[in-house]
Amino acid sequence: MIIDRRIQSVKLTNELSNFFLIPDIIKFIKELNEKINFKSDEDIIISIKYGKRVVINNSNSNLSNINPNDFVEIVDYNPLKNMFLTIGPNKPDFNMTIHWIVQNARRDKNVLVQIIRNNLIEINQNIKDKIKETSIEISKDILKKFRESDIIYTDKQEIFLIGNNLKEINLMINNKIEDL
Figure (tube, rainbow, N blue to C red):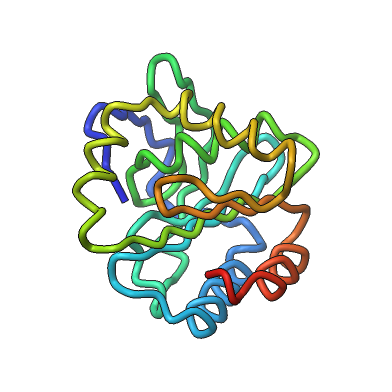
């Protein structure tokens, strides 16, 4: 979605993450992409807790050809300094900041899915809005909405789902597929 150039990262290694659920995440993304048929300006971002770490796919991955190279393992993130400590070949982006904050605040859930549905007309406005807002403000808003439901809709054409595993998320999506 948006790459914030102010994000700094320190890579522990460029090697791929060895998180055992990456093949399952790839399969889930490809199946969801087939169900919903995402356009080029739409995206799915999935983060899963891995101990104290978070494994997440990059924004703007080619959803039909997603592979292990598209994942970053976030070892640590400091939202005040906007500094990541990562494993993997890719750089962190703005969405990863939100996922890290929400995942660490919601210790009772393991999987966070962000579905980005954009209309071409609204993309420029969304980018302008994102630059003005910080990841902490956005995450606080998302966390407030998660108090009411495990599926939330933001005013930025995004849908967030939170659950314990990919099967639970899949059931939520299947129940709400007509809304997507």
